[in-house]
Amino acid sequence: MSARGGVRNPDFLKLWAGAGLNHLAVRVGAITYPLLALWHSGSPGVAGLVMAAVLLPNLVVQLPAGVLVDRLDRRRLMLWCDVGCVLVTGSVGGALLAGAYWTAHLAVAGFLHGALCVVHALAEQAAVRHVVSAGELPVALGRNEARSRGAALLGQPVGSVLLAAGRTLPFLVAAAAHLASLLLLLTIRRDLQESRGPAAEPPLRAVRAGAAWLFARPFLRTLVLLLSASNVVFQAVTLALMEIVVRGHGSVALVGVITALSGLGGMAGALTGSWWARRAGLRPLVIGAFALWSLVIAALAVSTSPPVLALLYTLIGYAGGAINVSAHVRLVQVTPDALLGRVTSVALLVGMGPAAAGSLAAGLLLDAAGTTRTVLGMSAVMALLAAVAALSPALRGEPTARAQNRRGK
Image (cartoon, rainbow, N blue to C red; front, side):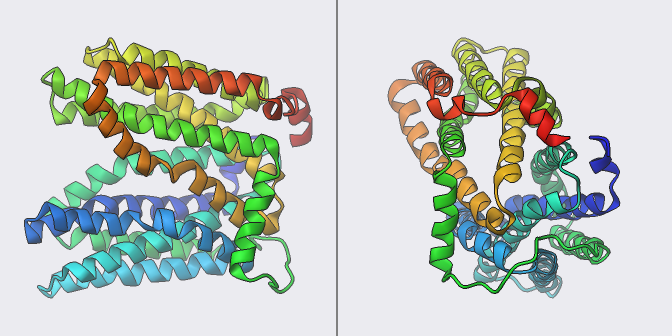
């Protein structure tokens, strides 16, 4: 098949669309759960508590989800996740229609919704290579990354508009989206995993097996740690954008426009990441992305013009989309199917987990050192990471782009 075939493959399109509806529904929920809590309670503290409940599954559910994805039938697991999401979001919408509201109900529903979507997303990521050929996999995963960034881009405005139109609407629409995802999955008949024997390992040992496999591979270990460090840096860069705009007497809407353009840049990077990786290889792409980030972040330290800021953040998003999809392609290509859920969950936790601490540290650093010095410091950190990528013996062992292309044929 051609590289474009993965986009036309009916089973891939059903899987892609169903997971896209789930991504959008959970992104809508991320803004509407806390907004509804603020609306009813009038307390930012209560809203913050509900927001924490919605986001907590990203940290505490990833590793158990990886075990489930590797032990259970992935198609059935996603179907049950969709059923659960319909019930959870429908319970909130139904309660509101009946004139009832409880903060505890909202927090528990937000946590369960997020947890079920974490499991669904991880199962879908592991299932993709079973509905496309090896040659189509990079293009298919690029479409998935672009879809995820598009959902992140649309989630907040869609959720806000729906909530403004009616308190029940975001939850009823989310329930309908999960129901549509379920119906799409029911039409996929093929297996979404290799045949397996009965699970023999206890869950904790199963998680350790996935982590051990990942960290025993020098190339993947180094790549995940580099991306984790970059995600911490980007917390400071995001906060710096807010500070730069506010200092220049800009509006909150301007921050939204710039971050939206960054999201569009990420979508474009995701769609072209496999093209860059095929021609240059993953190692040069990693080095180039970190070097570009270092230069762009340095330019932020002296930029106040909104068009320039928009361009710089679009470049940041583009490089991020390209490197994320290329790294994910490599992970999926080399990981045994029986370990794919656990390995992916460990990679996501290591890659994204430190970002929460990075946000706190970034805020303290901006207060103590000021925006310009903090941003220049982050540029220096990115330059250091680019040098590590260039000098790392682990990354030098990566196959050439030509060898990778021959494997994909």
